[in-house]
Amino acid sequence: MAGVNPARRADIPRIVDMIVALRASVQGPVEVDRDWTARTVAQLMVSPSACVFVTRTGFIAGLLQPTLVSPKPVAKELGWWSGDRRDGVRLLRAFEAWAEERGATLVQLSTAPDGPDLTRLGYARAELAWVR
Image 1 (cartoon, rainbow, N blue to C red):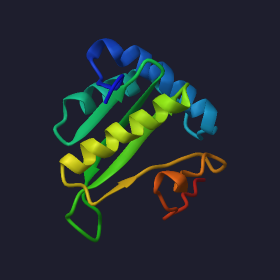
Image 2: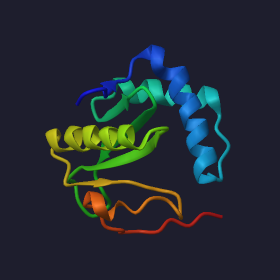
Image 3: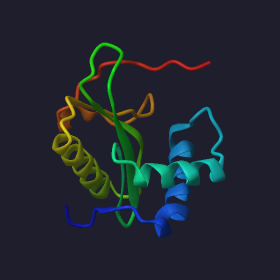
Image 4: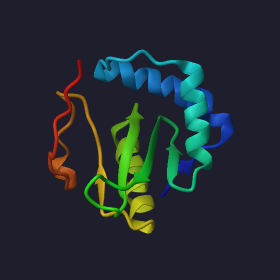
């Protein structure tokens, strides 16, 4: 997909900065530990069951995982942020293609409680997460 590339080690500091921006934009309840985050991103980049894609303004990271009720893989987005809406959609489409190529039965995304409505992109709300 044009402008979307697999992340490289040199991208990690920029991805961590974007994760800090993501946390701020969704008012995430957990502070970002930059060192832990950098190590985790590096591990995802080399895992055969995970991916990290970047554009000029954003990133998406995710992994394949079975569920409690089925061994069939679900592609779970772990972080998705872009400073440009079009780049954000391109990142999502790259993640969807990656998931489909690997046999994922569905793609699971998360947004802030007042985040974008993803129904226009073919998604349905399936769960609501609660934290304490």
